[in-house]
Image (cartoon, rainbow, N blue to C red; front, side, top):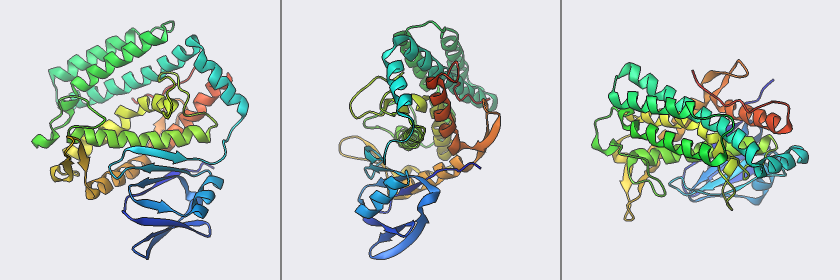
Length: 339
């Protein structure tokens, strides 16, 4: 039996969460808004002014439910996890591989292959529906990047090819957006802070994805702070950022385009602050989170395991495959590649 570990997102401001038996009780304005059994959850994400009782935080730690705090606009602040799970020998081997240029380059190459392959598939699917010279040119550049990813490349070269592929992909990303509203005009990737509605939506999805993948890595006994493609930096979940690369185009980017093109998110839901940053209002944020949760519940076939499963379970299996690779049970890490 497989359990799908879901994530509970709390966006209602001035909410208070408390332990109620084996449930999380959500209160707002002195009224009970609902109860959620803790055994159905793998993560708890709190946006803005949301507080928890100490007893609930302890209960989450005991039940391996990761708690993350974000600003109201989705910027990651901090997270809390219970006792480290998994064999200490696995983490020791992870650290040794991260210190090895050859081992790091090997895993980083596999991650970049997954990212480039999925990015190219997204562009090719769009080109079949709406032929475009920009999509064709970007697809060709991605194919060239893929061909140059030889097994013996040093890490710096792998990272250089990854950066080149990202530039090629985002150079044609605007073609994927068919909504004519000028608010959704995409001229390039920007972040910290996002300066337009499309980048605001992309950054928000990347934050949600990072939380889910970080929880999956913790559950598999890996240290999310020690990566291979992304190097160590205090406070940065480098390994979670590594594994995100496979899923950005397939899940976050495609869903962002879908919400914009179908009009599920409106131009009026995005506001520009005095600093120039673009943020979502609460109603838009709720709509985006609901779409994210629904997408994670859809099923697809895992290409390596050849088994159908909810999309939200895929990164849990990828984390386990990475752990098997680090232990030496697999010769190489098999990236998640869509067809």
